[in-house]
Amino acid sequence: MSDASASSTANSLPFNFYWKNSVTESIYLAEEIFFPNGTIAGIEYHYEFVQDLAAQPLKVWIKNTDAQDLSSGWLSSDGYTLVFDSVLDFAAGSGSVFLSFLQPFVYTGGNLAIRANRPMDSVYYLSGNHFRQYSSPEAPNRSRHIQSDSIVYDPQAPPAEPSVHSFHNSLCCCKISLWTSLNCRSTAKEPISCSVGHP
Image (cartoon, rainbow, N blue to C red; front, top):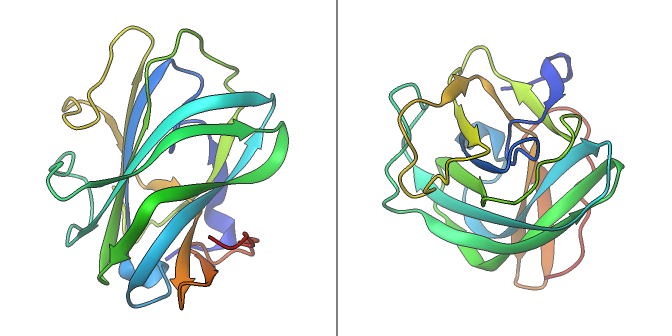
């Protein structure tokens, strides 16, 4: 589990805008998700950016998993569902961005794996565009990331030599309640606003 003292920011997860192309993967444990099962309509990331970034193409896959960490390598792409394939705008400063899923994802309980991709771009941006993250020393090695300015990585078959660490992003999973509203719960124990609109 996490606490506020383990919170920080970095540009490596889930999308690395300092590099033109990146692939990342993180595992969230069941006790961090705060509801036993349900239908997830989207996720919300919290960021601290030093510049405006408009219309950024991004992709996200998600799957239910029994895996506890990523110390043995990337998870198999089998079972992943593409839930986001669109563009997002980021305003300079502290903020949050909501990724509305293409279709609601059925969370069956247990752990969740999220793979994220910034497709190859023609430009890179400042290194100070960070996302909020936290560490769990008692449950390490739950994130992987790889990035390049020249290699186009296949997010369905990333190479075996990425960086592995114990940080993962503060995340709000937005669960559909009775198909009419979203109940957003943060995976971090620090105070985080998870307010979003209706689906």
